[in-house]
Length: 323
Image (tube, rainbow, N blue to C red):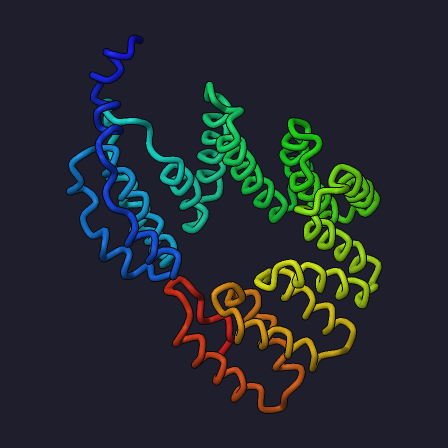
């Protein structure tokens, strides 16, 4: 197709039109203000260009999913009709369309859509572009996690191994394969992969935290919780906002029967970096520690719940305090 005919096509004209101002929606999303974002995008169907309408609809559907209004999100996606004059739907829209059935729940439909999405990503002419390879890895990892959760271990391992086969020197994907082996109890395979990660990531300081997390997991398997704490502390030194390392350090302290310090670690993280540390897993673990440590744990948890109500984003599940 010539450049002239391409410029004259409806799809190109729509895509070339200036994008709507997304600075406000982006700011609201990063602050977790999904109710306000939904109000800001109240009428995505009013957007002039089909491409813009799809983009705003994707943001609206994401807001509805974050607010656990899954039926409304599915209805919004179902109301969108393919427009031959419009570019393909944004990847976010297609991913949400695939994921929403998991919450109804309709797992077979979700799996069918996820595998269809994965096939379409891999069939693209630009499938080797870094962004599409990242999306391929994202969908594959979602599928692998679901299969692991349903104890379909062979399928899960095959999905991650396929990613690794295409990028055999990618420490992140290799580590993901090791984690999958750990989950199914194949410690020898996990250890072998971790050793390979050490060799391919050697000398690259950008992978130092990844290597420390991997070593910490091996220490946990060996029940050497003190060594695991030291590895997680290296992660936290590199990135104080590493909420996963903070949470896991606290758990290792608890397993070491140092409940007081474990509580201090999680409370300190919530106080100093609430945006990074405030998630349901951290709160569930902290509440469990309160229940073990205090006779009046109900009162302590109520104080925590009151604080969460003031600072948590709209999509935070406040029931995790078990009040």
